[in-house]
Image (tube, rainbow, N blue to C red; front, side):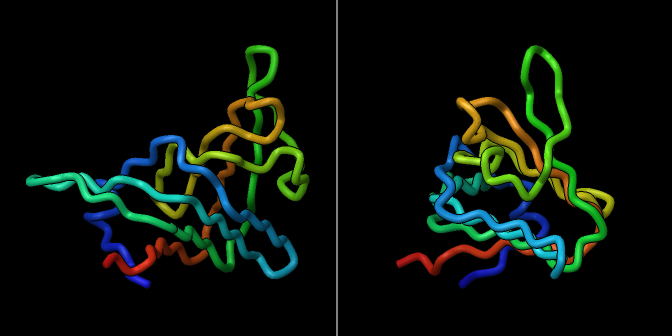
Length: 127
């Protein structure tokens, strides 16, 4: 596994990346989402990164929202009916991590915002 630097994180672009695993554990305060991949945009080239793991350990809180009927509604972050099927956006700033994309709920837009914790993105080693 390769750990991305902060500079690389800012250059990471998800393009409706299929989610292969997602877990939210409010007891152990851990959040994990694995997706098919993303593009790392550098000055010279775009590099495709496969099998990305996004992990937030020891978070203080997690909020899940889904966009239905032209507004965001807060939903239970543990309810798999609202988990993401595709990751489209990721931001990590000032101790908050937001992961957004399409949910299992009829393809509605959803986001998960985690406050605090240690944040890491790892990618499978490229050949």
